[in-house]
Length: 98
Image 1 (cartoon, rainbow, N blue to C red):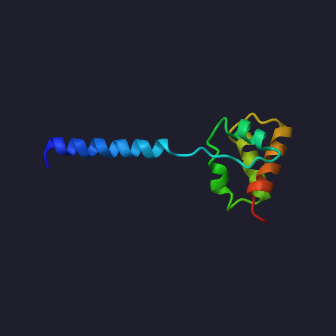
Image 2: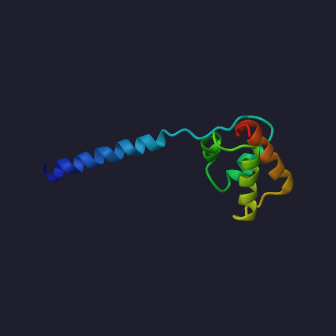
Image 3: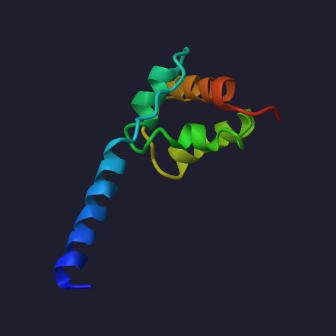
C-alpha cells in the first residue's frame, strides 16, 4: 500500500467514526413526575444514559444509595426535596423489584 492509499483509508475511517458518533440519540427519560429533578440535578454533572444502563441492576434501595453517594461522596448540590423526588422517580421508573 502506498502512503496515499493508507491516508485515504484512514480519512475514510475517521469520517465514518465521526458520523456514527453524530448519529447517537440523546437519552430521553420517561415523562413522569420527578423527571425534571433528575434532568436538572443528575444531568448537570453526567450523562443521563447511566440511568437506563443501570436500571436492570438497581432496586429502590440501590437507587437511594446511588443518590446519597452522589450527594455525600461527590458533593452533588442536591436539595433534600429534589433528592426525594429523584429517588422516587428512579425507583418507580427504572428500578427492579428488590
